[in-house]
Image 1: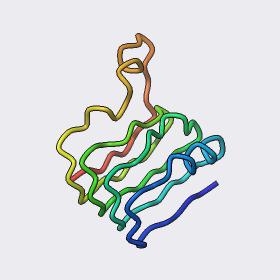
Image 2: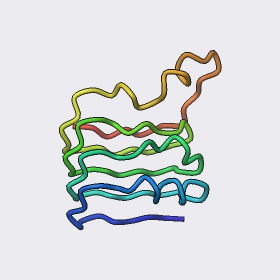
Image 3: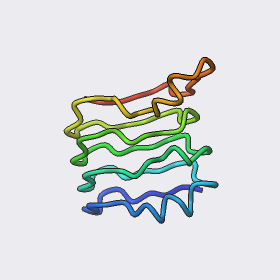
Length: 104
């Protein structure tokens, strides 16, 4: 399942929407909006691609380690802390499929 809502001046992404789509969501594209934050995406285990470029984000969303590509270009992000939960990183078996992270 793909959710594409780019170029719409959207200021927020409802948590309910993410929760309802979390089991099937594979692609989430919300580039070129007015997003100030993105809900926790950790529960989206099938999510492979997320694009939140050209928004007004100040924090990175928490993501599931199965995410392959995350685009956060042209935002106001100053730190990548919070990308993965502390519990995940502290685990001896932590592994991420993230192969492409775009932030500038």
